Amino acid sequence: SPLALYYFPSITSTNDIAREYLKTSDQPLLVVAEHQTGGRGRRGRQWASCYAHNLLFTYGVPRFSAMQGLEGLSLLVGLTLVDVVNASLGVDAKVKWPNDVLINGAKLAGVLVEIQGDIGGDYSLIIGVGLNVNESPSVGDREVTSLMKNFGRAINRSELLVAFVDQLRRNINLFCLEGFSSFSGRWNEMDAYRGCQVQVEQGGEILVGLSRGVNANGVLDIEVEGELRSVHGGEVSLRAV
Ligand code: BTN
Image 1 (spheres, rainbow, N blue to C red):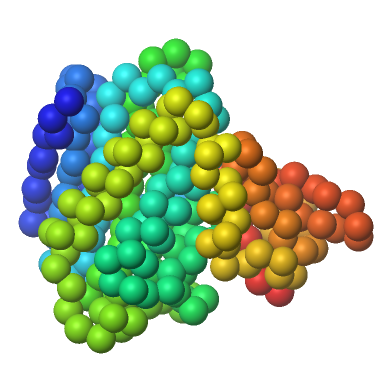
Image 2 (cartoon, helix red, strand yellow):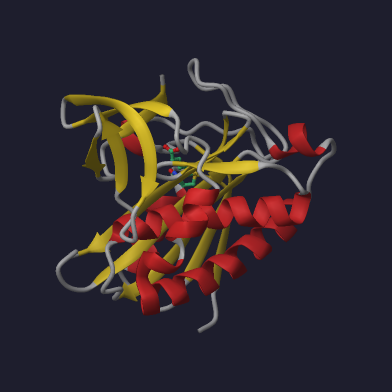
């Protein structure tokens, strides 16, 4: 079905606006902003951006009914970003579990997937993406990068947005039919931390081990003292050690 497009010079958060619209709309939608006053990241973090330099948007899907876990879906969004920017600009972006996008270890994009409604029943999908296109806003002490830094010149944001949303819609259709299993191999191929020593904090517990990639459901395996431990997405953070 056709995509409803909403464009704002400045708003609180594209995810929040999409959530409001999805309460009444039964059409897929795209909310795009040049600037956010309350841009949110995962784990309660803030998402900063420079006016009109980057991409800040939310793709909303009403009455989503994937029988598959949402865990894999958010991994799919990061993977789609990686594939689209690598194919269209020849950069070397990688995924970082659960859904960051990195170039040479620096953060290029982040994904915040939320839902509107009841997870056990009818719900709408809210897929928020922040992509550093022509500027890398500094946030705290995390290393950030932009596409322009790696590509060498300014990039047309509209073309990139169209290419991404187009590919994302196709990938979500396949995800609805086959789940994450059709993407897990590719995700592992593009994993920035594959085989690396990592540290994961999950529910207060800190796991240190070798990253062994994701399974067909998008669950991450970490090898700790010869044993595989499963790590689920959500309120989890991972870093290289
Ligand atoms: C993260 O890396 O923690 C996720 C960042 C997600 C940021 C995007 S920008 C568009 C959308 N609106 C928000 O408030 N957040 C997401």
